[in-house]
Length: 358
Image 1 (cartoon, rainbow, N blue to C red):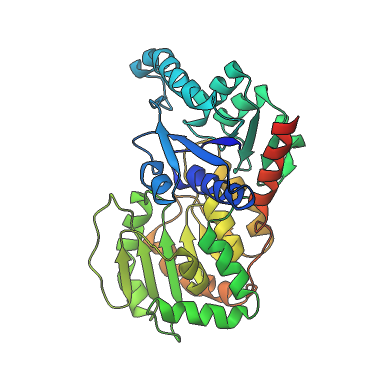
Image 2: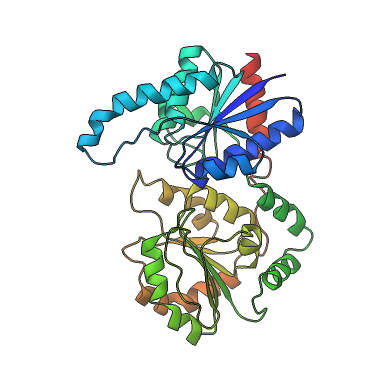
C-alpha cells in the first residue's frame, strides 16, 4: 500500500487539479492513501475534506510582491513550514506538487527526506514555487508547452479537470447543441435570450464586479441574460431583470455549457474548463503576477474561441460598444468543446507511478 502526498493550496487553480489527480489515483489504487498539505487560510481547508481526503495544515509562508518589513520573517516562517511538511512527506512514497505557496516548503521537505517528487505546472509561465521544485526532480508535467527552462522538456499532460467538468464533456459529446440548450434550461434562463456568465476567479474580482455593476442597464436594455458570480467575500448586488448575481456558481459545468459568452479572468483552471465546455470568452487577465494569464489564453485566442482585453481597457463603455460583436463572434464559435484535457489526471498518475519505481 502506497501513500501519496499532494501539495497544492490557496486558490482553486492549485487545489482542483490536485483533487482530480487524487481521485484518479484512488480509482486505480483503491487500497492506497492520498494525503494533502495545505494551510488554514486556503480553499483547501473546505474542498479537501469535502472530497474525502485528509488535510494536514502547515504554516503559510507569506511573501509580499513588493519589498516590505514582512520579508524579514520569511526565513523563520519557511523553516517552520518545512519542518511541518517533513512530518507528512517523510511518510509518503511520492510527493505530487501543483505550485503555490504550499508547494515550496513541501518540495524542500521532499528533497531533505529523499522522497520522489512529481510537479505539475498549470500555467504557461511556471511560477516560482515550481521552478524551485524543479531543481530537485526531472519528473515534470505541464498543461501548456513551455518554451524555456526545465519545464520545456516536461510531459505535456494537460490540466486535470474537476469531475463534473470532465463528465459534462463526456455527456455533451453525443450532441453539443442539445447539451447546451438543456444546461440553459436547468439553470432557469430563457432559451431564446443570449446568456453571459461572468466570474472573477475563485475569490471573485472587485474590478470586474464594478464594471458589471455599471453595465446592468445595458444588459437589460438588450435583452441579455446574465449570471454573475461576484465571489463569496464580496457584497451581493441586487438582481434586476434578467441579471442574476450569485456569490458562487455551484453548477459550473452547466454554467460553461449554457453560456453564449463567458467573461472571466484567464487563470489556468478557468481556461482549461472553458476549453472543455465553453463556446466563446472575453478574458480579462489579472494585471499582477508574471503575465501568465495572458499566455494561458493565447491558444484559445488563436483558435477563435476567445479574445483578451486588459483590465484598464475593460470598462462599461467598452461593453456597451462591443456586446453585439462579442455575441456575434460567440454565435459563430465552434459548438463543441475541446476534450484535450480529459486524460490529464491519468497521465500525471502514470508519471507519479514511474517516479516511485525509479
